[in-house]
Image 1 (cartoon, rainbow, N blue to C red):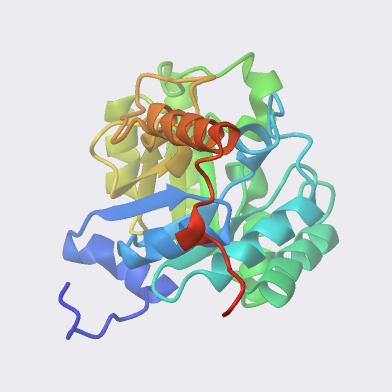
Image 2: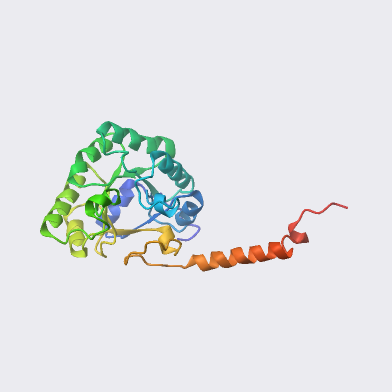
Length: 275
């Protein structure tokens, strides 16, 4: 887009309309102001502030330890760095499952305290009522079905969903239930590609795939993954668009060498006494 063209903010309505127009939707997960500014300048459609922050930035083994306070801080940082992308806040484990009252309250906190424009929560048919009540309160909701990380113990690990007929039927019915409840879109994670295609055709709201094949209405990946910055777990659907660790290490080593040799700072990088 040229500098002379005014960028039109991605709203929930514009996000949803992309499906009807046949436009693919690009989403990236990020967690801080600095990265949000870069992605916003690149004109990413949406930034999902994911509870994967627990693993990527805090070294946790999963998403369960992530709290509302952690998520609120990161969502706030991201919203401060965006003016174009739609910012979606991931509701962490046990911030919405125990009760409708808790779900509504915490979804509201993301909007009031962190300026999120939508929230995302995991679960299918069983979460339809929760989605409905949050939407009724004026907060847009993105659903999330398939391999849902917060329920990873129930799945017995990160396993592809939809391989069996029972699973396929549950996923399709869940997608339709979430749409009926008012969700404006949904993430399809680790779902067999043909089943994800079937789900995408069965609903009128956008499907955003991650490890679910090319037939979804859009795709989401974690920015740290596509930059090669997170190599602890690399599933087959991750594509590296850069390999930054060697570049960062090289810069750090050069800085260390310059400091130890006395080469940094030089006179031009110092504030000298005025004559």
